[in-house]
Image (cartoon, rainbow, N blue to C red; front, top):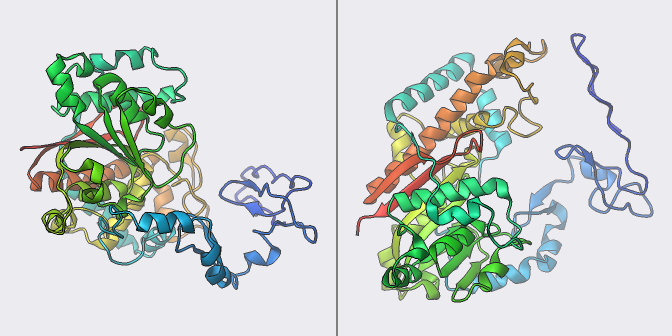
Length: 457
């Protein structure tokens, strides 16, 4: 078992790693900071997923081509593909009329990992690093919008704010304030009728005909609020993962509600192929669309090839507007980003963009929440500023560690602002009335940017 390195400069040693649980695999999972919980094979102390030789560089794990959410040993890849448990779903999905591989992707090379982004930053010279920081600050001052606070709690959502909802719905109350403000901003921006289901009968009928497509829907509780408070009856939930404890059951029990859950990656979704959405006016919504999911969503809703697709027999539908809460900018990818022209106009090319996305996590997480980045920092800014870097740490990492925590955080927020401003400008260039607002205070969630837009016709 590996032992932690001795402490440097007289600092206190980290707590010793606990021993493995008897009868469990002895493989240490560094990201989870615990041992594997699987039972070992009879002939070894390790489970079938973690044989001792798995740590050898000669055995490399690669993403499964059927479903990249899991990995397999490279030498077992061919045999695994034939029996992958996700194969049946993948084959069924490929046969759907709304499946179009990579339609909302920018194409190009494979995604750039966080480790690769970090390595690229660490290759910079000191002069190049500070030049990039100066360029980010200059771009932020010149191009970003002045984001206004828009913390809204509409009357229509009172029963959610007061907890007077179906308690069989296992939503997390800490998210209610965020959901209420997203919905409230939609109402304020004219995407929803004020009062929702409390309106006159003719207004309710018009609103009931409106559909909602929630991207990255997860368990679907944002849409649940729209159904409860605004009488939305046509619901489409887009999510690539399978979830338990979701809102679907409650929504299906709601009389008059039609619900369709599309288990598909946004990257591959062609909305014009969703037959039940044809000819329908819809709202596109999403709460915390991680990284490139925001770019792929706006591409999905405003695809350049929509007229071409219509000519091929797909029925056209009508976007009324969208409300997308962005997050996880550190996961953004150049190949997916909607407004490369905006960044290039600021002198920010691909490698600089990926460095910017890596910096963006400093806004909410000083250590990038990974083993390959900065060590976890003390909670107070004074402690961060006073902390001296290890003498053995050299180059860009040493420079980064010497930047006070509050300055790193400010730079991270600048990067997030620039990325979202480019998205805002792209929506406006497509003829939408659009705004970028802070929809909750940062103490509720530092991921508090909301893109809201409305079609003019």
